[in-house]
Structure formats: C-alpha cells, structure tokens
Length: 315
Image (cartoon, rainbow, N blue to C red; front, side):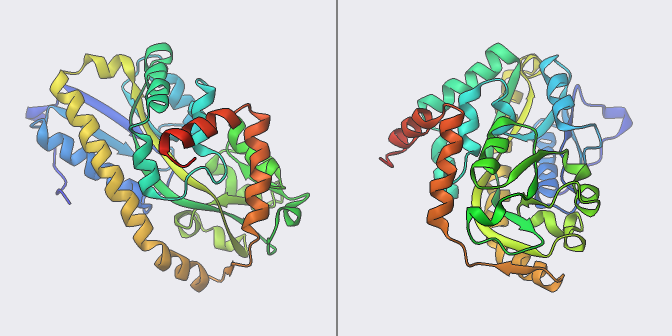
C-alpha cells in the first residue's frame, strides 16, 4: 500500500476531486479509495488531489450524481442500478444472479455492448465511469427470521436502494421493496418501517445492523458491482496523462479491494456470528434463480442479459 501524503499549503494542487461514498470509515472501500487517491497524488507529483469522504459526508448519492452531471469536480461510488436511470440497459449488471465471480466482472470490461453504455453515459449524460472493478461481494437478505425460498419473503418490507433494477429484483425474489437511503436503514429497521435489508457482510458491523437484525440468509442474489464516477466535463479538463493515471489507478485499486473483500469474507462471516447473528445456509438457489428472471423480464432486459452472456461465451 502507498503511504498517505500530506499536501503543503505552498504546493497546492492544480486539480482537486472530492470523492463521496455512503459506506463507513472502516469499510474496505474507504481504505482502497484512499490508496487510489495516494497513488494518483504521487504519480502526478501532487498536482491532482483526491479527497475521500465516507458516510455520505458530501450528501446523498443521487444528489452527488446530479452535481457530477453539471460538471462539479466531485465523484461518487455508485452502481449500475443508478446508472440505469440514464442508460437503462446498463442496470442489467446489478440484476439477480447476473455474474458469479470476480473474473466474470473483469471480463465485462472488454465487451463491446458494455463499452457502448459507458460511452453513452459520458457523451449524453456527462457521467464518466472511471472503473467498475470495485466488487463488494455477494448481497444476502438480512432479516429477523430464516429465509430459505422466495415464498419466505412474502410480505416482508426490504430496504432497497431507489432504482428500478433493485426494486424489481427484490420484488421478483419475493419481498416488498421499500426505497430508503442507506443512512436511514438502521432507524428504519429499528422502527419497523422495513423488516430487513439485502446487504454484504461488510455492512453489518460498520452500521451496527446486528443490533436490529438476527439472520443473514446467504441467498447470494447479487454480486455487487460498484462504479466509480466523476464529471465527464471535469475529466476532459485534465491533461491526457492525468486522465490515464486516474483510470489506471482506479482500476488497480478496485481489483485489489475486491480480492481483499473476497479473501476476508470468511472472517466477516465469523464476526457476524460473534455479534449474535445466525448464518442461514439452507437456501433453495434454484428457486431464487428462477424467480429472479422476472426482474429482467419486467424491465425489458432479458435480451440484453442474453447478449451479454453471448459476448462472455456463457451461452
């Protein structure tokens, strides 16, 4: 890991990017986003500075994305579900059981269809995707009762990010999707506004969810691919060399973060048990996979999914 650098007042950077994410300061992403910032700072001799803000300190995700579109030099860790609000097809990357390994995610970078979506986000909506090599791991339903099959989720209100693919996926898998910002989730569960959430293991201790939820049901329904996005206008204002450095180091740090999260899953799983949560593994995956197909159908993404699989060589 590259050591952190201190900016001196006498050597102020020419370019400064303020980068926001919703996760806590102990989440692996925060560390690796800072590694990315440090490496960029070093390679540009302090001329390009990235300031990383955790826990939505700069504001909620949707507001930051709108600022990005207006050309403000801010960035956001987001996902293809929210990018799907602009280019609907790209939301397929956050669909249920879409990909199942990091290697499949890396392969998506080379697909013509995916590159078309990335270009459209930049050219038509002002959103520059620096990297989507940031994978938080598998998301599971976290509730106060065991969940083995889609029918077990019937009537349960599950906190869901406010984007169509999340909403329709959770609905297809059997629950009642309830849009709620990440920072409101603990209180929402505590007050009974929602009955649970679908999250990754790293979210549990970071947000004290073990205090309000009893079960981690290992449904593995999403392999959570995250996108690091900034303003296309601001990106184009950078020297070409800086653009390349920004992208290269973001891709590199993302892969390192993803592999670390994958390696540490067993430890985080054990930690959830230490905190009093029950890990429920009696899951009917065939039933969940079959149910999840309805989300693609409802959003008109079935053919998109099939084309991606064809380009990946999966069909």
